[in-house]
Image (cartoon, rainbow, N blue to C red; front, side, top):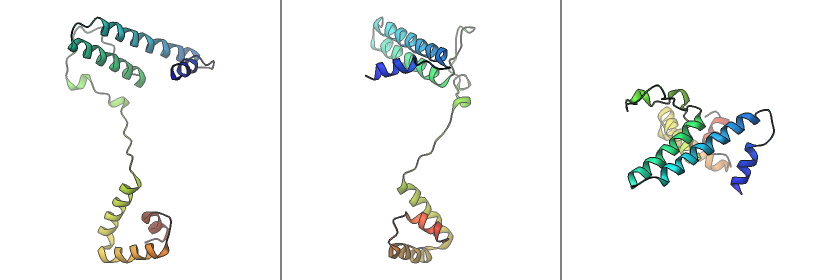
Length: 141
């Protein structure tokens, strides 16, 4: 089962065994605490709060930024207190259709509608298996 695979992976002997054990124990403690909080909830708001807090703890643990608020009694909801800019990354994923549409639009701006229509006809007559954008790049058009 997945649980067993994760358990075995976390205890796999290697040079990072201590790190795996720490991570595994910390995850388990966080989940156990969340379960304890949810069981002690007396209404739906407290239950949802327990679920949210547990999820956030796991997310912060996974990105490597566990907030340490032990020196502060109250944390305000100011934007700067909750930014994750140090750990943020963006990945743009586009489908082939989107890539082709962007290429088509940019090409039309550069060479005009009529010349693009001629190229499109040449591409179709070539019966190429490659996408239009790759065919055009290969043929330097």
